[in-house]
Image (cartoon, one colour):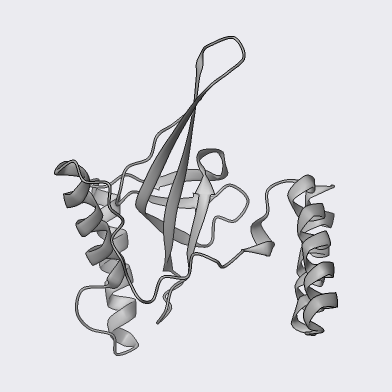
Length: 173
C-alpha cells in the first residue's frame, strides 16, 4: 500500500476530474488472527479543484485514492499556481484554507502532537454518494437513506437515493 503525505494532491480512484489535498491522516493498526499487524490509514482530504468557496472535506481509506502529485514536485507547484490563479479570478485572494490547515497539521505532527487542528468550516459529516467505491457501501447507503426519509420525510433523501442508484449501476458494469 502506498502511503500519502500531508499536502500531496490526490484523486479518487474512479473520479479523476476532482483534485484533493491530503490535510491530515490517521493510522489504525490492529492485529490479524495470525498475529501480524494490519495497518489501515484514513486520510482527511479537502477538495482543491474545481475551486469552491467552501470546499468539501471527506475522509477516505488509503485504497480509495490515487496520488496525482507529491508535495514538493514541480507539477505540484504548477497545479497550486493554477488553482491560485483560478481562485483570484473569482475574487478570492490570500492563502487558501487548505494550505493553512495542512501547514498547521504538518507542524503539529512534526512536534509530535496528534491534536486535530480545528476549523469552523470543516464538514466531516458529508458523505459523497457519487464516489462510493463498492456495491456493499451503495446498498448500505440506500438502506440508510430509506431510514432517514422515513424518519424525517425530507425529499432530499430520495434525491440522494437516485445518486446512489446511479453509482450502483456504474459499479455493477
